[in-house]
Length: 326
Image 1 (cartoon, helix red, strand yellow):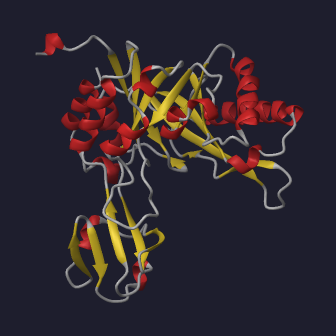
Image 2 (cartoon, helix red, strand yellow; image 1 turned 30 degrees about the horizontal axis):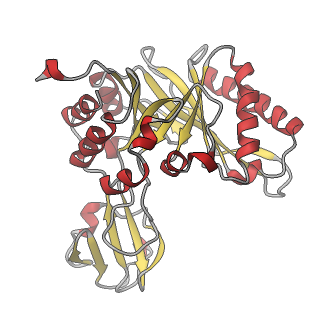
């Protein structure tokens, strides 16, 4: 059966989305077992300052340790849409220079002399598209023949005419956060195959830029009061929801608070929906995507490298998902 699989090469990689990088034995073991050679590290967000006058780095990463010698760093910069509004081409050119200068400094702090790729992350809109795309064109010559990539949301694949195609070497398709997080009900907004199918299919096959794939390795508790979204309860884990003195299971991953729970920011009768990315769903998504991606090499980038998250998966489960993308 192995010989019947197509010959596409799939390279495993991970995102690192924490504000402090420090080496961790469990995280390093996943990098080694999955033969990952790259770590996509969020360097900073770019947003407006408090006065609304200047674009500034927000929550930049710091490096408590150097990256392993066997791992190349791919810096990732998230651009808030608001930061792109009202910018002239001169300002965008200046912003491109500042981004590369800041990134170069952080890469050096990570113990690396260079990097193979810069990835830009922005959920651009019709209003900000032209400025964002111009910024990308200004970044290219500053990278000295490095790869420039950009993240791609599902709706930007489906609505290609309105969204446009970013002027980059590669795109990274974000196959997560695909549903309506704020809608009450038992759906899974992190990953759901039916949602994936609504956006992709032939739209994916015809996309004109080489594509990588991002899949989720995380979970969260989405809280509702009177069926109205009130936020993600960051202090709740799945074990908390199974405490029968605090929560009553309503089935379909919904849990009602039996009493006021100030430690979680909840009141009696608030409902929590537990969302996750089960290994079976990751495999289903990979198998579906494999039919529509037409290139012979791609990077599978897991979001994200974090010990509490990784403990929910085995090496074999992640290896199987990558195999199904071939």
